[in-house]
Length: 42
Image (cartoon, rainbow, N blue to C red; front, side, top):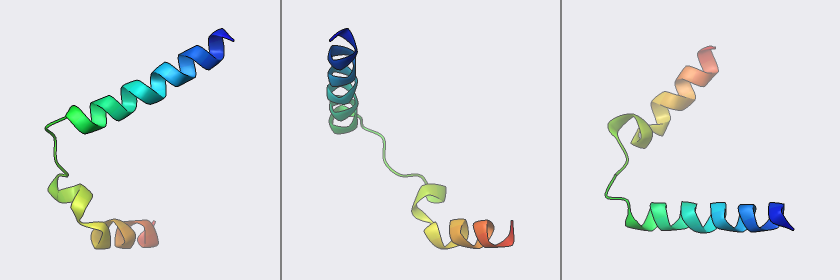
């Protein structure tokens, strides 16, 4: 039971952080084409 409570709190905290966070995607995170290329060459 304590594990279930911890997991629920973790999910709720993650969702709240995602909604309330002022951060936006950076150049790297929005450039999926370059990420795919990097994965292909490795």
